[in-house]
Image 1 (tube, rainbow, N blue to C red):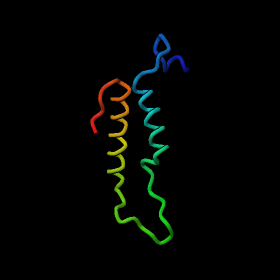
Image 2 (image 1 turned 90 degrees about the vertical axis):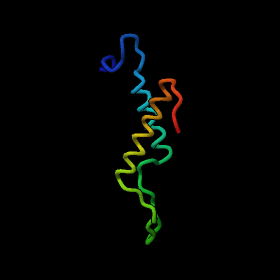
Image 3 (image 1 turned 90 degrees about the horizontal axis):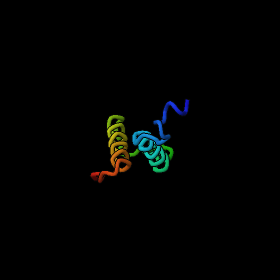
Length: 74
């Protein structure tokens, strides 16, 4: 089953590598998770779910550009 995900020479696709990089960055930086507030405190700038999804998609696009050897736009 592992061979089906890989190409003939065993190299991984850029999309797979970018996804692994994305997961690492998102987990390490706690991207996409709501901020843990203290009891009784609500952050005044709580982001909407749509904003979080948009941010995650942009992060994946940057990871894919980086893996592909393109210069990511900031």
